[in-house]
Length: 383
Ligand SMILES: Cc1cc2nc3c(=O)[nH]c(=O)nc-3n(C[C@H](O)[C@H](O)[C@H](O)COP(=O)(O)OP(=O)(O)OC[C@H]3O[C@@H](n4cnc5c(N)ncnc54)[C@H](O)[C@@H]3O)c2cc1C
Image 1 (tube, rainbow, N blue to C red):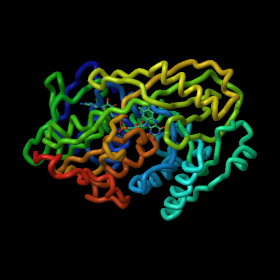
Image 2: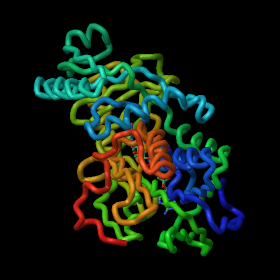
Image 3: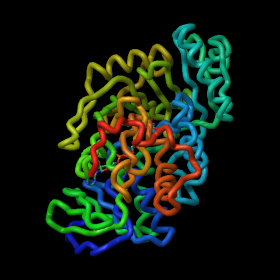
Image 4: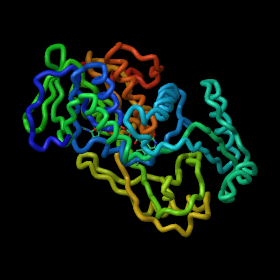
């Protein structure tokens, strides 16, 4: 709820969540469902930053081994969104095809598929001839590819806001347009202060502040090397169905999908942004390069008019993996930020994992490779 009349904050809650993207809203919802008193602060509108501005790829394919366990958990949740948030959020398990342009890239796909098989994920390897025979819209750039049938795509404009509404229904005190100005220790818990001077106390603090996550951590003395990532996105007018699967390409310089309404949505390269002003823009030169690549892979899109381009702001870590887990230096503080351009698919499971950590002190999902502890003690000061 937009906090326009600045109603008083609760004096004390069990948990405060800072950041109303999918991760924060899902965590808050699960904690409230478990009977916890939760207040969630979002500086603008819930789901309006990276969670609402992304490409909409729901893929397990291509992830590093450290991310696969939580990605699998997330994938199971995507099937259950209607029961969890009351809507399928446009999720279509269309399959995801990753394309290789060269023999070297193709060998990389084979190696990844072998690794994923060890985790129980079945990914088919397809030659260029087989791919072009099955997908006759593909252009001559394709050397080969890999196919994960359980991946797909969804509408990001629905996911975050629907988790926010579900959180409110569960009893979360959701405060939109409420930037957190200060997070500090207060006895064994925390005091959270807003820019207008209001404050509340909480036993537990959850940092789901996305690209601003390291700024929140820094307030309690922890330093993370989080940078800003702003992918360049483009969408065309709607067209008759051309392709169903979501596509990626080795190297990540182009990816594309066609929405259920017919718009061809593609991303490639980087836009520009200023996170202090929550401002992100695509770059026309980058969009033109991406469009040329898009046409190289699917020539039939050449005649479609581009109707919009945009960018967003995600946090990015040096090893391209999020920071997820208990703070190494502050008891009761939990981090989930720095999703490095691929946290949309993970978001619903990140919420569950955070709730596990708060409620049970551990989670069944192996997140050891995402732990804040992987950064050396010299970068994390004591609070
Ligand atoms: C253009 C683009 C394309 C992408 N494509 C994909 C994709 O296809 N597939 C995929 O898996 N991932 C993709 N991603 C990445 C994905 O969108 C993000 O990793 C994910 O949405 C992060 O979710 P989040 O909830 O952690 O962060 P966010 O959605 O950014 O939420 C964090 C929230 O914290 C709030 N906040 C920050 N500081 C404060 C404060 N002091 N007080 C109160 N609130 C605060 C922010 O306003 C924000 O709403 C893409 C990202 C972008 C930008």
